[in-house]
Image: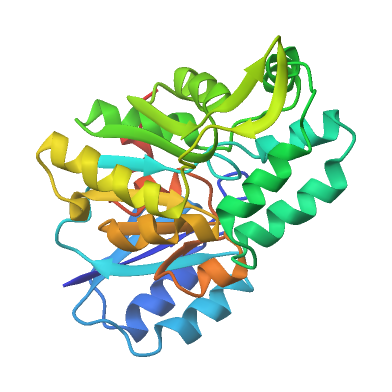
Length: 291
């Protein structure tokens, strides 16, 4: 048995009964369940529909996401999440680079690295090198003035933890940021790279080894083993090429507003919904969300 979930942006609810019932009838699905009127609905289907990607593409044009997954085991016991452009709207290194006067140049490198066009570790070293001499105090100012949470993040973390889930923030960014964001969102733990500082200024170097694609996979394996669960019992979310290993290993790997090359390698894609989409995909209704 499979579950088809349709969802859209909660800020502009546009999921109507006609769209849901038309697809349910075409796929011989079970009764439609509205998880959040206008925002998310689901129904069971006996088999994986052969035309699901054609339907997906048509719904994308309407601002609607579609995910079809196995019904069994979809409610997860662990959340493992990327930070930049996933749990927050920004790329932290781009914001620091803007303060250092090299924002546009660094942002281009970041975009190419996240799309898989550049080696992540080399690209990180190059970008961090351009931050040399930046006052360490800039980090706190960037967190205060420039960083904003991705919509739905607080509800996602709170709801999973309220239902016995464990939440880990694993980033190719920096501990100075993950520590702050993990604290705000109440993640159970966080892992990231460490910017090196001397005499109150960034040295232009990052501590080795760099936490990249392989380290995110390692984090999922280590944390799940420690919790006595398997990676199949985790839901992972990210947007960049360095998230692909983690997304592929988790039971449900969600490409959230992801780069095109990342989407192409992921079965679960959320382009219009926010982070609450990860709760709808697990079968949570809006009235079950934790505060």
